[in-house]
Image (cartoon, rainbow, N blue to C red):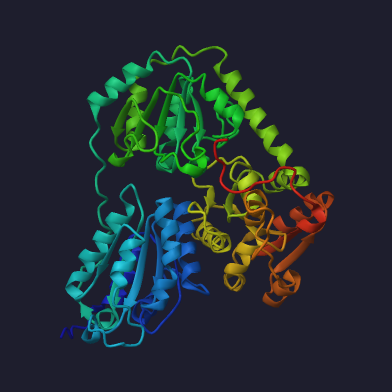
Length: 554
């Protein structure tokens, strides 16, 4: 056994490793099976540990923290049930391509994998974690700890990114090991080499395009400077919801994320070259893959399996978005011979799409306008799955930062509040100086309502706009459209949200009419810490349009 006083526990090694990776905040729930790690974080006081009220919330917080900061998210759970609680949130991080390190405990090595019914035992825990992330590892001895942590970090942060789990038996966490001081962060894995011949061939195809358009996904978030070079040559741009803000959505050559509305689909038919970069062209953004996109479709993606996925492409380039677009910009003429009417047609299509959207909101158009006026553009815009997000939050307000939009990409409800907490605390820790706004429905809010006490305890600086209709609104609309208006299991019994917030020391406003929206939201925006603005949808009335599930081609 190592007795040298300079040796440290594996738990402390984990803490030092996270510090070397520039982690400022970690999230989780303390347990008997992760205490050596958390004790080291507490003693060193270099990483803020946020005690969530559940492991699912902790993982959502870590996910959002990584999305807005660009630094790997860290979630720390216990073994067994605690680890299992995080699985759904891991699916969300995996869907979104979030670099996340999930550290979980495990029972004592002596009893591991023996099916003894030991407390907190989960015999197939590694298999479960592999199924909801990119990879999962076990540290079975102190001398394996550093190499395993480095490997996990590299896999999680290598595009396409995703969550990686590491389980550490409790006895191993407490064992001691000699380590080099200081610990250095692992080296990032290199991007694929540039395909110079392929890029030259692609440039030759694109040189003659007079109405060229970029479609940007989340895989292009870091490629803003290269995208701007193509805009300077006259290109237009549209984004997936995950790719919002790579270009300031107020830019006159941007369609924002108005990517499937009828005026936009008509506009696509005038585009003579569509270059899709870092996007999966997901079902709910392509009318279940039936959106009419230009036939001259080309693709750049770090993932070789993206070639011809969902839509056939005339040419595919595997590579990093920034490097490939920079190389492409070098090869194209400056400026290109762009159709003089292209930008005006693009702006007209966007205006038509925005007008159509607002017409479907009815009284809630006033809420959208008030949020945009009060919040401004320098915000973190976090959304749960709710009618309001689907009908307008996914596309407005205009975002001006490639990490400003955080939403439940996988379609699960109940993640918005926790994501808002992670965004707010990461913004503070990394000095990013943006206010966090969260849009949530009552059903989703109640699913993880306990995290409101975490927001209060941590003084997370956020405004939560709570859309309260006492029901699962989307499901009810589907029942109207498909099930003969037979309503079952959609009505919700909610607490008095004012009293609930008061009991936790959280500011609350009840917004009963559109005319008060601007004044109430202004008060909330000026209030430090967490606050809730509840929109009484029964008093506001119905949306003009009726949303009944993901849009499909009619």
